[in-house]
Image (cartoon, rainbow, N blue to C red; front, top):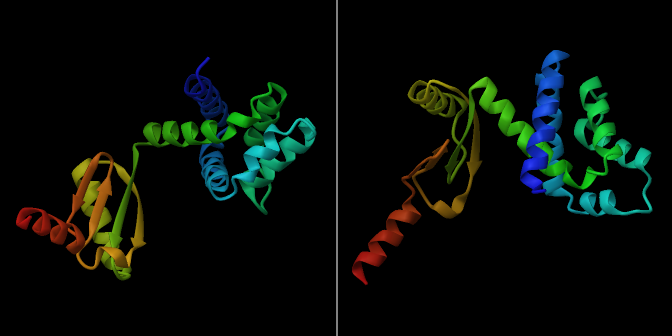
Length: 179
């Protein structure tokens, strides 16, 4: 079977289970954290695929990575045990990403980002977030990134839309047109 199909099936099951237990918001935060940990610590996957590490330790590692210092939700703990018992721990990163995607879709949440060369005020980022929310009629998780390489202007991304009004892009276009 395909990893995408398997991870989506597990993610749908987790979403349904968490919703039934009224813990979907808490589980979403845990899965978001877990997906970020997988990106930051590539050795985590090696540990989960190591046959020397027993199932109890794999479960403990995943639960600890998902919630950090706080206590894991009942839904996450039980789900991680199920995944590890079924020898799917190596797919947990994909399951976490699929869960976040399904959760966002079910709650009408889209992700957006604003990339600027210097930090902007909170009121400016709030105005842009409100503009995106009004245009998409959805809730927006908005992230502001500071990247001095764009030299000026901004890059606004959300859903499948990208507005690149950066000075770097404009200079590249000018250079291409002069060549």
